[in-house]
Length: 264
Image 1 (cartoon, one colour):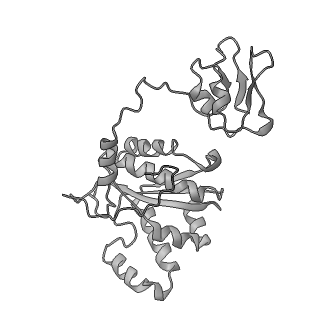
Image 2 (cartoon, one colour):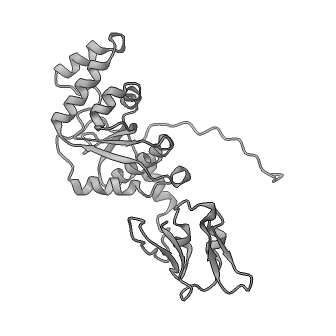
Image 3 (cartoon, helix red, strand yellow):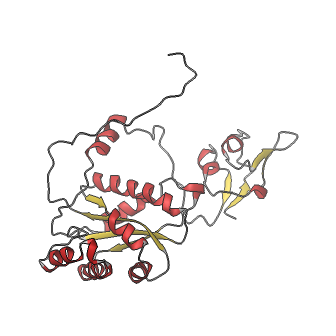
């Protein structure tokens, strides 16, 4: 069990862990002199007790990472700055014939581990494909698995003319897969984190939803790509954009209904 308890010598009895724990695993003893940890209700491994403790008194192990300290004003990015990144993000389907360094792609992947997950399940895995031959093999597998009425001949013609009909000649494909069904909900959030991170690094990305759906319906092809029985829950392509945008297209406002106890 990663959360082991509390370092009594460090604890200042602030009770923040009691208030923060979603499973109510922390309590204070009858004399109000010691915080107690009881895992009878099961720990979600969310780490909020570690994050909220001002003294660093939570004892833990085997969490596969170390903590990092927040600066005093860690929420320093402004709404306007974040909004600009989100608003300017475009799905890139034109890429330069240039590989992205593994160091940059690792930064994109690293961002995904901080994405929120359902019940704090962290079972997503990544497959990065940067080999042109392997990408071509996947294209061939998909075309072979298509029915004639799904445009098979048109896709074959594009492929034979050197046009990538599915991944837009992107130099890198990032596949998120898992054996946990919860990750069908978690993967889209992780992918959003990845694409926004890529944007800040000057990289373009695009969610390839059509192939993701196709592979979910063709398990034998999915297994050939992954080498295991996991399900694919997300596919994005990454590379340097070969297109420049001068303005953002219109987007309709989200229809919103407000239920409030206010009379206004």
